[in-house]
Image 1 (cartoon, rainbow over the protein chains, first blue to last red):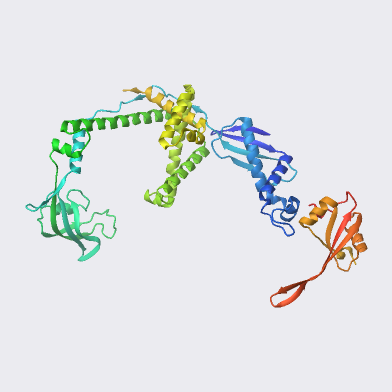
Image 2: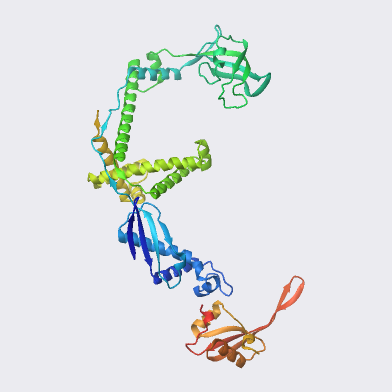
Length: 428
Length: 94
């Protein structure tokens, strides 16, 4: 027996009555689960009658298990009875003092249910058309990158160091005449102009000849990460060993041939192919932008009250996923956190945000699918199964055994809803 | 002897529980010196039931060694008491 009451924030409160017989049944079940481990003198292990057990340990020791059993039974019955779609674990409340053998008791379960979604505007949303054009400059930048990848390093001896060269040198830094940690190295390779050393270091090295030595007087920046050095005046003694210059290969058909790309052996063809790749990339990102915009705007326009429990449940699911992934990479979860430079609290906070968003999106899409009457045909279902099977390289039967039909169908519905949103976008 | 001196404790084991269930017989540890009549009267007095028969088993002392000391486990007497049908002794059934 259960009564239902709707609370705010998409929660319902179920008041469920458990009869005395049901409770006794629960006690018996509870004893059955522990019986095999009960030991009392005079009886073989697992052969102790319930009455004897109760006399020795008290019937109260069975309450916990009994209540769990009863609640899991009656709670699901109540859900079916009232046709409730829950989205999180229920919060169960009861008065422990009202419980006893031969007595009936009532408990309440407060649980988050799937929120009602009121869709706002979701069709014909206006969006600025994302650019899909590829400029000549972008193509040239790509080619420059290719040239740099294939560049040769040439040793220079007849001129001093200049910007863009790579210098190989020893250096020794001293603070008030004493060397400090991390301030020295030998045969260090540094690209001048890469700004990987403190400001001024690279500039002051320009003009040095091979074999030359020089003292660089420098000041560490105030926000330098090593506190004992920040803002201090230091002297670096450097000795230049070698200067190397990057020589870009000539952009001609020979260079293109050396790249060894199939079917491309002229500069024009290379440009054409790069342009094509960039275009495809841009189209893809434009499509993503459209999808993001459509789904986000639609969900922002919709109103719904997402129960906190639902978010927490989703967050926990995400957290578990992350832990699993970390394990697959052979990392402990703590290590993973360290790598990403986050504390557990911060990480959870972020997940909460993500969870909220993803629930919002999903609910919106579901509502759209419903509002538009999106149906999924058997062919679409089978096609999707095939797709999944190919993706994971398993047979269609295995897929359908692992995923329930409802899940797959919902997935297709969502995708169709997304397509619908994107197609209806009004690009300006 | 007092009834409470004669009847020392109920013996609750798998076997004695079987006797309760099948034959309405209850097993107690009793004083070695008591005879069947005394046991019968004591049970009737303590539990307010009618006893139809009493069987007594005497267990012999058993050697028992605790470290270097040789000793014995005490002798004892067990009484299996049959009750009139429908009579019950509560302590055996909860």
